[in-house]
Length: 91
Image (spheres, rainbow, N blue to C red):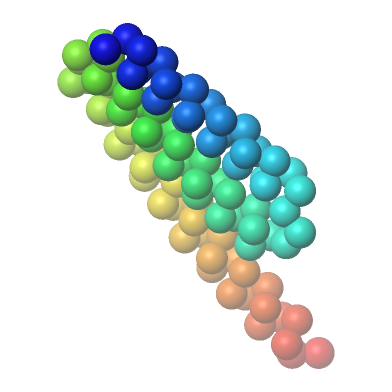
């Protein structure tokens, strides 16, 4: 079973690296925002994997915190982009 955990952890690291590339190279702010959302999902999956490996249910509390912070950040960014687009359209 340790081989499976290693493969899954490796795919999480690879996904995080690829998302990091998109975060740095993303041509627009929306690409970067989506990359941050995906990074939050990868972090949550990593925390879930850690909870499975440790067989500890208390590992799920940080997952809840990360999901709430990710949702709040996404909602705030969407609101920021909405007002920013309105200001650009009203010259």
